[in-house]
Image (cartoon, rainbow, N blue to C red; front, side, top):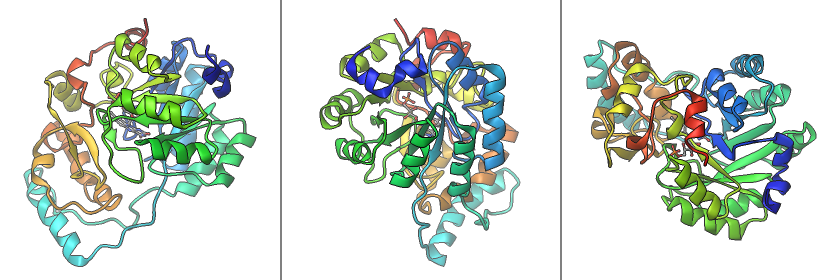
Length: 342
Ligand SMILES: Cc1cc2nc3c(=O)[nH]c(=O)nc-3n(C[C@H](O)[C@H](O)[C@H](O)COP(=O)(O)O)c2cc1C
């Protein structure tokens, strides 16, 4: 244990493996996956951004029914809702309408509620009292950081640049997750869509902040994890490496697409949610050129994604994956975790 680990009080977490299973909202990071990783000595994370407060409580209870080990819960920090014109909505709908037609759906329409109520989600997390709360897409107000602290919950924020890492540290987080450009899923920062090399960003952040740094992005095996720790990270956070875990909620067509992935098959796209995210390229990433800003596009594509999942049509699914997707493996979460540790 180095000094940084001690400052994070990871001794309190009692991790045997310095790997965090990344939170993966949208059904991938199931309670079964989270519990299996935590039970095997890593830190499992529940991606709760799209869950209602009630679902957060239920998912947390489901993790606790499987393990008494610590785990993390993760939410997205909401920004102000973007203003869009009727023309912009019409253009986004026109891009999606032909894809809808192929699945036998009416053209999409914006629902009344475009995202979950963050304040209510946050209260549910406080009540659940996981060992760790992690967040992406912004900063958490000082009051909320204090409330988490008072509840004995460690706080981890996500940065995609050294400047964001410094801002989070000033804000009082216990650790900063730095997300390199190779990472799967949404870019987790809030000031820009930087795509820095994971190890470089780790070194920059380690110099810039006085809290532990957790490296994320493209870490697919034990050598990658060792390199991240060698660059000064206290922990490695891995998402794509767990996508094909038996316990993950990854759908069958998503798994098949991952199994077939080759080098260079991922792309950065706003087509699904309006926010830049990395996933396997497909019909949607190629044909949706006028997305609404986040979270409006996310709400607008919900029906398409649900119908595609039911119909087993990966060409219409958001296949979030990092640049290391082609190096992913199948197995139990415990087997995959073991492959990430010496
Ligand atoms: C399917 C998927 C969903 C993700 N969802 C979230 C999320 O809900 N919250 C979050 O902070 N990060 C999320 N991420 C990003 C991860 O936290 C992490 O930065 C990324 O997985 C690391 O890169 P890797 O995929 O190459 O391991 C997601 C990543 C993937 C692949």
